[in-house]
Amino acid sequence: MDFKIISERNGTAKMSWDKSDDITGNLYFSLNIVPGTLFNNPTFGLLLSDIKKVTVAKLTLIKQRVVNAVQWIIDVGKATYIDVLVERDLANINRVNIKIEALQANGTNLSYSQFRTVGGPAQGFSI
Image (cartoon, rainbow, N blue to C red):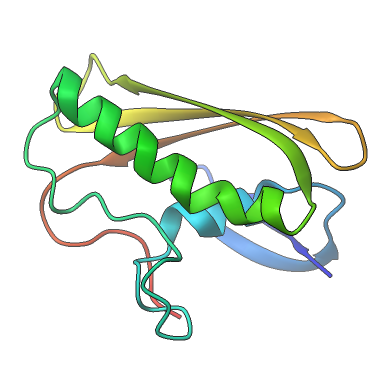
């Protein structure tokens, strides 16, 4: 069973004990866990700390990393389609906006968006 993720006004999130009927929590965890920290699995999560500057080429790299990070959601049958768009944040040159459109297994569409900063120490959290 998946649990709901509640977004806070300050940009953070917390998990509730309420059942989730969508893949929002799966997307959140996939994009916020530092690779190698979940059961020492180096393939789960999203790493952006090694990218020092957001260029067109780096946007392509970031998009591929996001696609790889969320692929498991399709592989286990929670979604049938996930489309990823990564845009440079015009207000902050060290930040990108990750936009996801997904067709969930139950046939409903889901839109998800998250800003992430590149460079600096690894972001996200460890479990």
